Length: 202
Ligand SMILES: [Zn+2]
Image (tube, rainbow, N blue to C red; front, top):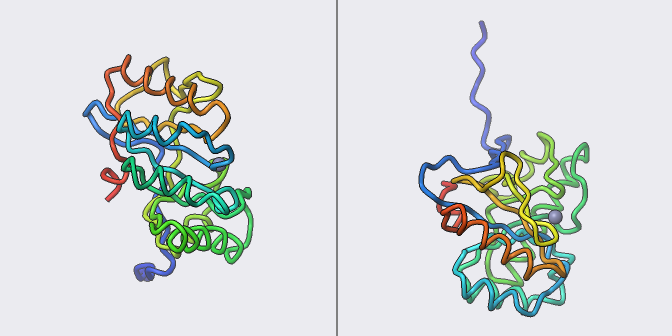
C-alpha cells in the first residue's frame, strides 16, 4: 500500500454546517442577499439583540454601504459572504467560483471594514469546487440552514418547532418586519435564545 500524503492546505475544503450540535437552548438567525433595505431593520435587530449573520451579495450592497454598516455597527451582527452576483455555483470552474467568493469578501473588507469568514452558497447549492474555493478565500465554513422564514411564517425542515442548534434563514425582503417578528415569536415559544453563530464555528 502506498501511503497517501496529507492534502496541502491549498487544496483544503471548508466544512458544510447545516445546524449546530448543542444541548443548550440556542438558535441562530441569518439574513440573506440584501435586496430590499427595510428602514426598520437596524432598529428591530438592535432592540432584540439576536446577533444575526448577514450573508450579503455585493451587487445588493453596492451603493447602500451606509445602510448595512449601520446595522453591523449597532447590533453585533456579523457579515457573511454570499458571492458577488448570487449565481448557482455548481459545476462552474474553480476560477469562476473563487472570484465570486473572494471578490465579495475583498469588497466588504474595503467598503464595510469587516472581512467575512463564513460563507453561504447561493440557493444552498455547491460542489466540491465551491468548498475548495471558499477555503482559498479564507472562509471557515459553508453555512446552510435547518429552518426558514417566508411571508411571515417559520418553516421547519423537521417537525413543527425550532430545535436547539437550528440555523434559521430569512431575507432582506419587503416582509422583513413580519419575518423577523415571526422568528422572534417562534424562538420564544420554543424556549430558545438567539446567540452569535461565529462563536460556535471554531
Ligand atoms: Zn441568497
